[in-house]
Each structure stands twice: as C-alpha cells, then as structure tokens.
Length: 60
Image (cartoon, rainbow, N blue to C red):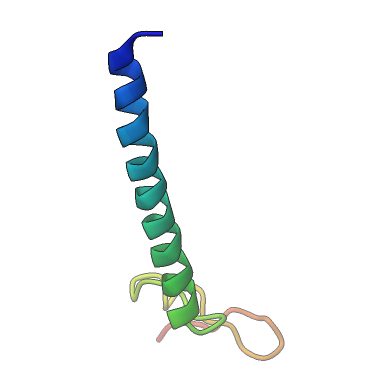
C-alpha cells in the first residue's frame, strides 16, 4: 500500500468520525428539544393538529 494512502487514512478517518459524532449529537439534541406530537415547522402545524381522539382539527 502506498505511504500517501496510509497518511490520508490516518488523518481522514478520525476527522470523519468526529464529524459523524457531531451530526449525531445535533440530531439527538434537536429531537430532545421538540415536544412529542408537535411538528417541526409552523407551515405543517395547521395540517397536523389532532384532538385527543386522534381526529384532525379543521383550520378556520
């Protein structure tokens, strides 16, 4: 194996691992901040509001 590839892998793999860990932590934090049943965006809020019985609410 070429020496350049070994050096590349020794640098690239830890960096990619750090980036993947950072993205995973961001995703987990984003899920934790949201309340269950609340949509992410306000545009979808009117479409997906449900009452206790699970029926969609009508928008006025």
